[in-house]
Image 1 (cartoon, rainbow, N blue to C red):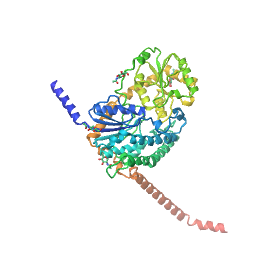
Image 2: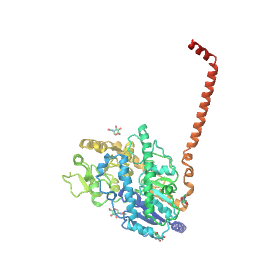
Image 3: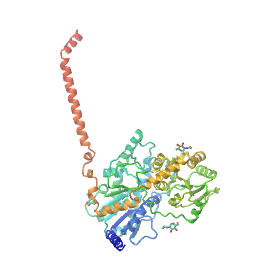
Image 4: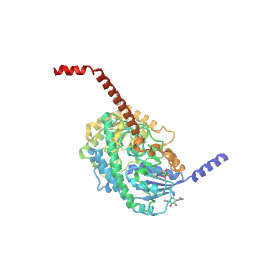
Length: 523
Ligand SMILES: *[C@@H]1O[C@H](CO)[C@@H](O)[C@H](O)[C@H]1NC(C)=O
Ligand SMILES: *[C@@H]1O[C@H](CO)[C@@H](O)[C@H](O)[C@H]1NC(C)=O
Ligand SMILES: *[C@@H]1O[C@H](CO)[C@@H](O)[C@H](O)[C@H]1NC(C)=O
Ligand SMILES: *[C@@H]1O[C@H](CO)[C@@H](O)[C@H](O)[C@H]1NC(C)=O
């Protein structure tokens, strides 16, 4: 026993000795991003690393080795000039969404981060880091911090597979099965689906690489002074990234080939979450003898802004149900509230979905919420609004535990019919339970997987050796274009020779008859 204790002690000490200085750059203020990113930073600190986090959300009681550098507290909507009614975005094309929200918002937001008082003070300090972890979203200029601190760079996405990243690090694109993350396509593997995917991937890449990244480079020059020369481009920094953690998992997302340094950690925010419900909600759900329906459109969409006739339709449907309904509703007033409806401005979502009486989740299909439903085995009725929501729901629908209801089609009849179907047909809940089991069936929990590979990169000083060797090659060589062109040339040459030989033989054979014909013609 003492020997065991001794070993355990030594292991703990050994672990402690490996504790590293980590800079965790996750400034984006959107709540859904933070839900996924927070546990990674806190877990690193729990494991004894000295974590400095640049963030938009203050953790109320951080451990002493978790230092928070705060970004000025402003919502993404304020930064891009006014809060839109998110429901209006249903009509926006993927291109419009990129121009008006992602790119416009990304630039404004990055500038806000670099202008934040605490961030400026922090950048002026003299610090050393063993690893810089950045959120991979629309704030690339912050990647330069890896160069500033002469540390390897790791990235983490809150959405799944990232096409831009695949192109930069030469991960296979697999455009026939892997869809560009924010592109809405009804049948991704059909000819038109694949054509659209190719078009959009090129469109997004060209804009990003030749315009957006250039804009981000300007921020580097303007705000991050005193960098060691030569300063690598943001493109080269991303190309040289040591690790990419993606919020996906093959049990849910389409299986895809990944380089060893692209690691799936989908569901990492779910493992150590707090499963205690507030007492009032616990009681409501315990007493829901016909089960309960949970409706929440996520942190960015306010149900109160739903157009009047849709709101009325939803409420009328709820009135007809015998189930208890929980709805995230952002207003103090609720006129004519049905008795079975409970509204709250905020809902502890994962804890609610974990309650056995929850029968169905009416969701906008955000990835975090969809993963929470999957994890807890709850069927979905999905009303996609923007970004990757349609794709997440389409995936869940094809796996048999979700039904998509298009926003424009919402009325009393359609919603009631769908709810009734999902509530009464057991196949949805059975599929959801099976998905939950598959989603959890892994050698290591997703959060521990993230920890292992982050520490691996630190232990191995950025692990140069596991990056794709194709990064050393030119674009043409990496994609075998020269070899294919050579083979095409040889084939064409052979065809040319054959045609030539055949025509010579023919003309030789017909050599005697030709003049005859000419003669007869002339005569
Ligand atoms: C932890 O990181 C901060 C940088 O934010 C640094 O000032 C501090 O000295 C570090 N602490 C240790 C024990 O390395
Ligand atoms: C879990 O949630 C309950 C109720 O909201 C709260 O009282 C408790 O402090 C939380 N526990 C942790 C570990 O966050
Ligand atoms: C339940 O739903 C499944 C999948 O949509 C369908 O195949 C099955 O026929 C339905 N069962 C009943 C009883 O409606
Ligand atoms: C790439 O990153 C490694 C650390 O992972 C660093 O040692 C190396 O100098 C970088 N190479 C380039 C070309 O930036």
